[in-house]
Length: 144
Image 1: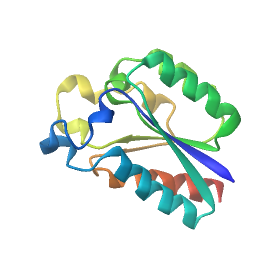
Image 2 (image 1 turned 60 degrees about the horizontal axis):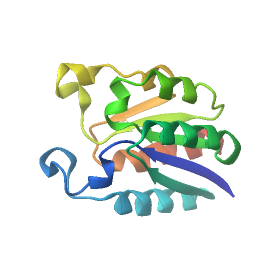
Image 3 (image 1 turned 90 degrees about the vertical axis):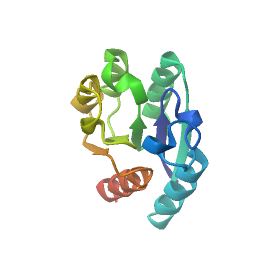
Image 4 (image 1 turned 30 degrees about the vertical axis):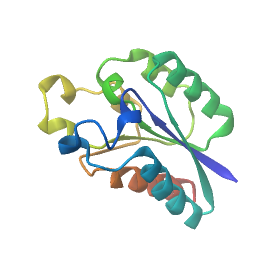
């Protein structure tokens, strides 16, 4: 079965607890459940991972080259800082969708720039955790 990797960066392990006024009350378990249901409808599986270590994220992107057909990535703060994650994503040949729970364009100016967007095939921001399921749906339709 084709697998879509859903990669989450720093502090997303606290989803549902940290700044609920920005990120809501849903958890990564909710994200995984929603995305798995969408993927299953199209005959795909998902693998959701979260790390607070940039090198781990890069390793998972490298692993995805062999084990994933697509990547949904919420790099968190690394969105705005990590050329290394951009370089890793540039080695991945499948579709990449960048996903942000909040609308980063309505937030602090430093959040308006994304290195990841230079590689992403699409960007979803500000739709809460629903954005993840939409990203999965888009990858499924691209790979149909």
